[in-house]
Image (cartoon, rainbow, N blue to C red; front, side, top):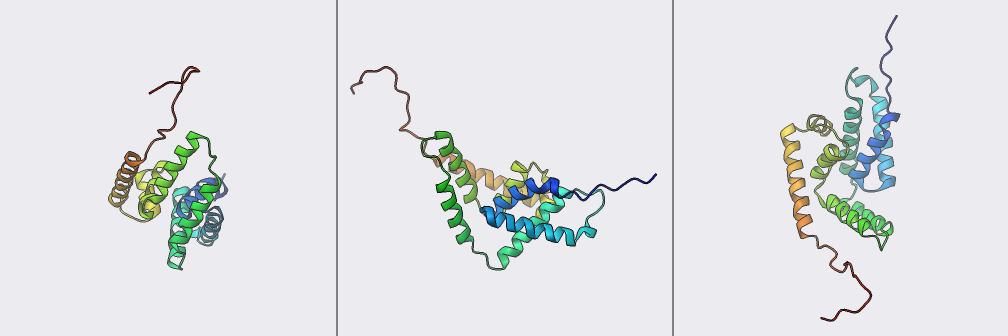
Length: 179
């Protein structure tokens, strides 16, 4: 009896591809376009996928390369930053401290240089090993580790410089306190 080969199951990888694309382009519509382009490339190059290879890493690498190609075709980094800022402002509930904090972390992440952001995303969010992330980005593992280290250091600096909400405090009792 012949063993069937593992299916070329890209559907099972869509969530990871969308998250990574969203991290790269910061816009839902552009991320969907990027994933679509990457999937078209994947199906066109299906024969180049090594049987027994890591499909997720291979697909993330295609998403990465499709993104690089898009950037080279003239996509403006400034335009993407502006669109992400507008979207973030519209989706932020005003009176929720945790939402404000999450927005601060998100903004800090998106302020990272693209190379650092994509490396950190693959390792911290997609849970790829350093080896898998380096392969997906097409860089040596030492380069990947350096980018992640610089990204984490920069996030720590931003965290230390971010003011906490001093206007929020617990007031006990019902009377007025005098200074």
